[in-house]
Image (tube, rainbow, N blue to C red; front, side, top):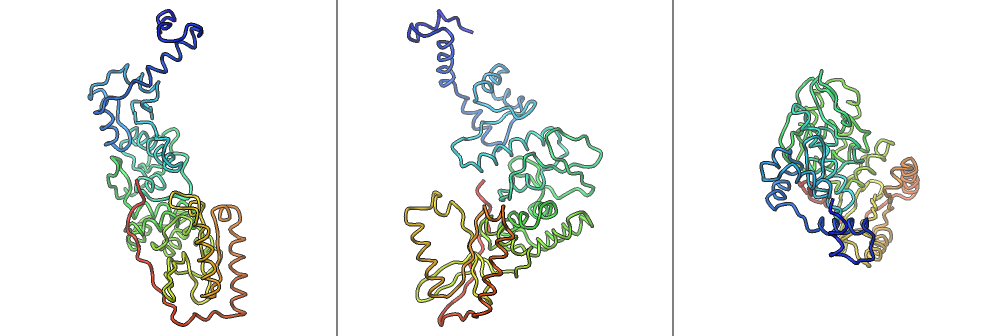
Length: 364
C-alpha cells in the first residue's frame, strides 16, 4: 500500500488520505489491461482457461490475483479463469454467458462428465424456457457428486460431440433429454428450435427408445410428436404447447396468407375453424427492430385479418402463459363456439403457403 504522502502530489491537498489512496488506485486500475495475447486466447477458448495455460502465455501468479481483484478476469473455480461477462449485452445473453462459464468449470472438475439437458441446449445455441440455476451434466454411475452442479447418472454413454471446447451431448440427444426432463410446453421451446436447426425426428425417437421406460418418457414421446420446426420463437412454441396439452387441435405454424396483393404471416392457424394465433412479445413493439410505427402497422394488420379475411385472432403473451394458461385455452374454446355458430368461408382468391423453415442456430 502506498503511503498517503506519496499520493498527495497527484490529487488535491484537502482530500483525506483514505480518499486519496482509493482514487489513486482507481486510476491505476483503469490504466491496466490484459495483454492482447491473453485476451485473444480467452476469447478463442470460448469459455475459460486454466491457470497453467495463462501462466504459459507470460502472466505471473501475482498478475492473476491482480486481474481478478480489479475485474479484469473472473475466477470460475479452482484454477479456472475467464473474461468478465459483457454487461453491454442483452440480459439473457449475459445469463447464458455466465452459465456457460460455470458449466466449463464443472466440466473441468470432472473430465468424464458431459454437458446435458438445458446446459447442452445453451451450448448448442438453442433457447430454453427457463435458465438453469446450476450446470447440468451427465456422468457415469458411482461418481462423486460436485457441489453446485446438477448431476444425472447415465448407464448408456450418450453420443458426445465437441462444441465451444466442451464435451456436449449430440443435438438429437439434447432435445430428447430436455423432452424427458421438462413439461411438454417448456420442452417444445427447445425441441422446436432443435428441429429448426436440423435435428431429425427419427433420431430423437431412437434416442428416446434407447432410454427405455424412464420417468417422463411418455410425455417426451408426445412432445417429440408435436415438435414443429416452423415455429420461430420460444413464445410461439410455449403458447402452442400450453394449448395442445389442454386438448386444442394441432395447428399449422407460420402460414402465409395472401389476398389482393397483400400478404400476412400467421404464427399459428386452425384453417378448418378460421382461427389465427398470434404470439405477442414485448420486443415486437419495444425491441431493436421496432419503431414508432410498429403499433400502427399491427393495428392495420389486425383489421385486415378480421374485416377482410373474417378470421378470429387469438393473442397471448409471456405473462399469460406463465400465470394463466388455462384462461388462454378457455379463450380459444370461446372462439371455437362462436365459429361453429357462424362457419368461416375463405374469401375468393385467398392463397395459403407455408413459410420456409430456417435451419439455423440461435446466435451464439
